[in-house]
View 1 (spheres, rainbow, N blue to C red):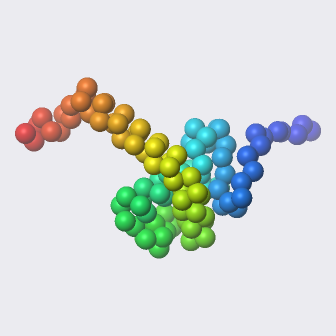
View 2 (view 1 turned 180 degrees about the horizontal axis):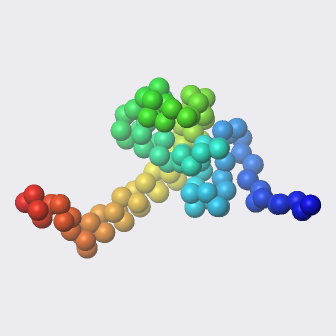
View 3 (view 1 turned 90 degrees about the horizontal axis):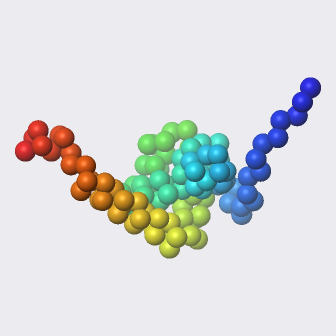
Length: 107
């Protein structure tokens, strides 16, 4: 009988948040899911969803986990917003290089 070792999850003062380099590229996630803190932040801060609406969209999440993700986001807001801006710029550059086929068809 062998004991399997798993990669240690970095400690956090947020009980519902974990970081594991093997899950979502090491992005902070809601533990036990692949839902990233950045996704919850976008849904809340950019799309204007309430925590209850986020739960409706992700019924497997607990409300306290969503609030913990938002707490983590606000504690790291500058870094996460910077990451969101960088990802948006990458998408814009990709969009310029690769025009939408659907836009060509629709006109």
